[in-house]
Length: 161
Image 1 (tube, rainbow, N blue to C red):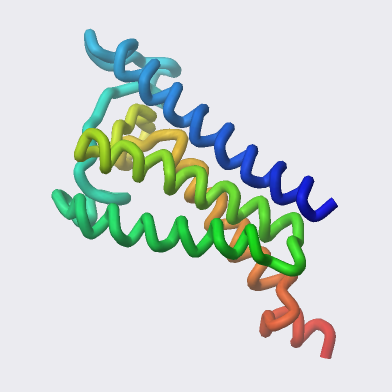
Image 2: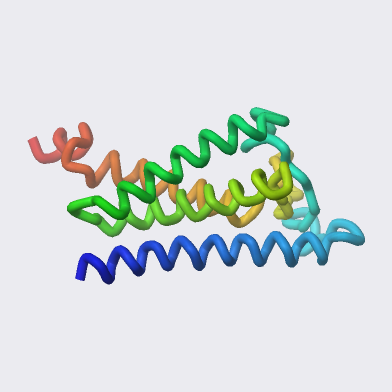
């Protein structure tokens, strides 16, 4: 059963990376002629080549971002493979984090930039992509797990003690 769960987790990572890759390729072609408004004043699609990380930090820091991302992804995948227990919420967070990280890492290695395309029109917010959504969701789930479900959590100890 453990082998099946591990295979399932790794397959989910691959499927999410493939979905991210497919979206970036589709958006690159679709947005070649310019931005598209999906919901007026709310949501649009705009092609953007991001040479940094979230919110423009590490602009042109390609190799630092590649190295840092690779180390984190390797750590996550090694943990997934060798974990004795695989709590579902923790595994979901790690699958999302690694898939999003691999998606953006691929772009940085191959192109030197990450393709972003989702634009929030109602506020000044960086353009982002599916991999960014996976990373953000994975990070949120990870923090929820660590705060409320991990046995070493101060919140859980307080509620149980």
